[in-house]
Length: 243
Ligand SMILES: Nc1ncnc2c1ncn2[C@@H]1O[C@H](COP(=O)(O)OP(=O)(O)O)[C@@H](O)[C@H]1O
Ligand SMILES: [Mg+2]
Image (cartoon, rainbow, N blue to C red; front, side):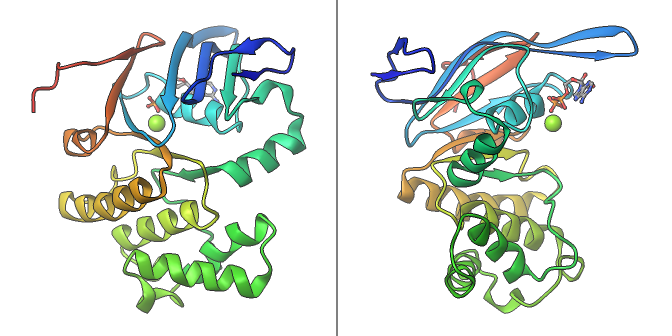
């Protein structure tokens, strides 16, 4: 049991992430759109969960709320016993950097930094000294089979290589929670499979809790659980995908 910001007891037993009645409404040009409508789910520690849903249904919105980049309209998100809503802007940024690794669909590498520097930057932002950050970055690049590309700039790398750098960057600070937004969405099937294999085996070994947004059934198959997002709400799928 843990307590939220108001001291209310929560049964978080083995749940690492608790999403309770989360709604997110966007207003644009006087029009309101309810993208998430009292969504509820939890993620157990160490589990990999795939999130499926059609384009535009709110998957990225949900990941941005979980990482504290975006704000809820109502509800609560509790990660490792901490209610994100109870943290101020600075504390939330620190919490995100420390506990969360985020992988974007379009890699989001810094163009002026080499592969090694892109990865080391995340370790440095978490307080590691420059030398140690470089060592950790080199280790993770090697884990992802990219030692020979350490000094290349993003534009000199293929899509699959850029995504592997982005994965190394998301893992270098040993986050407790990894959020991946269609990590193979811009890769051909073979690169996607290679990237997922490296990614999943490392996360399993480390016992990292992972939520992967994907359109790929091959990726969903590697997950322990499948959730779907439809009409703003989350449902758990059991046995509907026969494999
Ligand atoms: N910042 C924003 N302002 C207004 N509407 C947004 C914003 N971000 C997303 N939306 C809208 O919310 C819906 C869900 O978007 P998104 O979460 O990106 O979907 P998905 O990732 O599932 O494709 C879409 O209709 C999108 O247009
Ligand atoms: Mg999206």
